[in-house]
Image 1 (tube, rainbow, N blue to C red):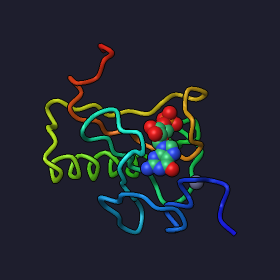
Image 2 (spheres, helix red, strand yellow):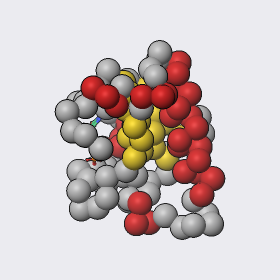
Image 3 (cartoon, rainbow, N blue to C red):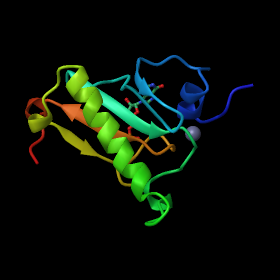
Image 4 (cartoon, rainbow, N blue to C red):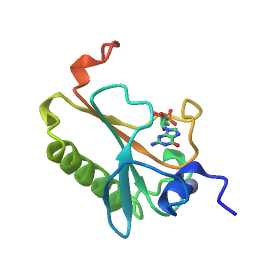
Length: 114
Ligand code: 5GP
Ligand code: ZN
């Protein structure tokens, strides 16, 4: 039986996803409802609930790798890093309870201004 976490199911290959990168620690796949041409989610394979669960010491390098590999995916997919956005939704304004970094390009195509 699959996990109740949809992103753990993607990690376990029990749910489909358009995977752009993966290694033993991280998986990066296309968002199912992209808000721009490039919209990827960079997630740790090990389940972490959200940014409130991050430890300054233990998770600093993981966060850096979520960003670095995500940036590489944007470049590989011909996105524009100079016109891109990355970030986490702050709980309770997230909908999936498995830590995921959004990487979006072009940011200038988004309807909201920031
Ligand atoms: P949140 O608001 O939690 O930061 O965003 C969750 C994101 O996950 C949303 O952008 C949503 O479109 C995406 N998402 C939700 N379920 C799935 C899924 O099953 N597959 C993929 N690829 N993306 C999903
Ligand atoms: Zn999970």
